[in-house]
Amino acid sequence: MDPQSVERPPSVLLAHRMQGHPVLVVGGGVVAQQRLEKLVPTGARVTLVADHFTAAVEQTALQCPQQVRLVRERYRESHLNLEPYWRLILVCLPSGAANHSDDAKGQSKSESDSEKVYRDAKRVFGAQQSVNVADVPALCDFYFGADTSGCPTGKGEGQLGSMQLLVSSNGVAPRYAALVRDELVRHLGELPLAQSLDRLDELRAAVREEAPGPEMVAVRMDWVCALTDRLGLRGAASMDVQEELKKFKDYCKERGEQVKSPSQDN
Amino acid sequence: MDPQSVERPPSVLLAHRMQGHPVLVVGGGVVAQQRLEKLVPTGARVTLVADHFTAAVEQTALQCPQQVRLVRERYRESHLNLEPYWRLILVCLPSGAANHSDDAKGQSKSESDSEKVYRDAKRVFGAQQSVNVADVPALCDFYFGADTSGCPTGKGEGQLGSMQLLVSSNGVAPRYAALVRDELVRHLGELPLAQSLDRLDELRAAVREEAPGPEMVAVRMDWVCALTDRLGLRGAASMDVQEELKKFKDYCKERGEQVKSPSQDN
Image 1 (cartoon, rainbow over the protein chains, first blue to last red):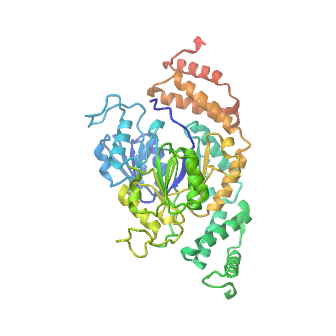
Image 2 (cartoon, each protein chain N blue to C red):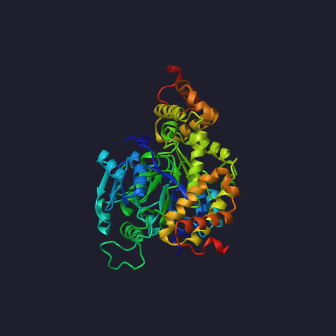
Image 3 (cartoon, rainbow over the protein chains, first blue to last red):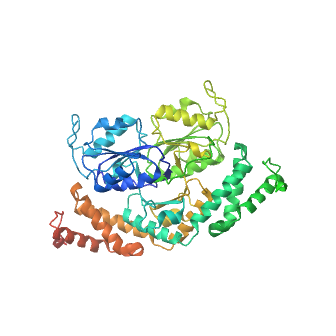
């Protein structure tokens, strides 16, 4: 099998919560460094295994000792046991680096270091283990695509608030995906995203407090959805949360739903 | 812990290749149906477990017997063994559905069916197992966000080619994320995306054929990146692939890199 050739039906795009979860990165070069920069802000705890690290990786490890651990050794299978599980395993070794690991017995001659890590990971943790081998599409359970973490436009996070964007070309043209991402971030720059999300967050918390309980999930959700549609992309930023909350109470009252404090109390 | 309250640092956004991979969906209602519509085009093999399915789920199962299996039973732990592993486990049960499973011994009184599936999955497959419980943010290893699979603008796939988009508000405002997604797809509608990706795909395949071998990965990648930047969002659609390929051969020759057929052969 040509490791560069892969089927390309659409992927499932997911946003993974990483807070406190362990991630293994095999490699310490520029690609490993890029992965680290993406992972640290998410709260993941990252272990990097390599016999050499870039200066930037070394510095990040010094600055974030709770989140970044450097293991200055060439990868061997026992490194998989450094944590009881890994949310993600990322292999960032030079392409074609072949068969240099210490415990090479039983390893086929043509197998690269990358392939060995991939195979070890699946054997130890099961096929449900998510692994990405940089530059070898056939050994990628997932692609990173172009996202807005550390977006080179330099205004990514502040401008987008808690919103994140992923553009994937499914391995067809990663750089073009990055151009599209940059264009979309520029376009979004004209919208009051951060303020809109803050207001909507505030509103949802207030609505949840008024009508708690799992039996009210659908009612809350439908109402917030309808309001969001009505406000639109620009209207959410300037909504009066207290005013809308009052309407929610009236809405519940009309429907005969129990809320904590009926509207007339105000 | 309030199951609605979760920490919200940024997530890691990933595009998962699902071709041939098994996915478990517990539930057969409207949410399960939405998940199914997202999964079938990706080539995933989906097992749904529920005592009732929507008509749309039933129909999809009839149309895609190789990909969709319906297990008409209320969830119990042994359903986890229907496949040797699950790439993803998705729980789509009505919120607050409490403690109705058949094998309830040992299950705490307050535990919902959803919580039980989540706990079973982690115990059987390890914490590396990715699980999403709809409507319970605290039991979501990942969020779906708003993506372009089955995008309601109706022109999603054809227009975007093999490109996909994910907008995540990290659970803050899902509907607003959907509005942003729709706006971005509209904006992208002005760009020749599908054609650009086709040309770039063709070019990359040709370049790979000219300069195969893992030691050339970096050379190929740098050259294609530089060209993509130069062409920009609109230029890629109209590039002359053979012309660019010739330039690549010259570039390699200048650098003294071995290519299959030097430029002067043309």
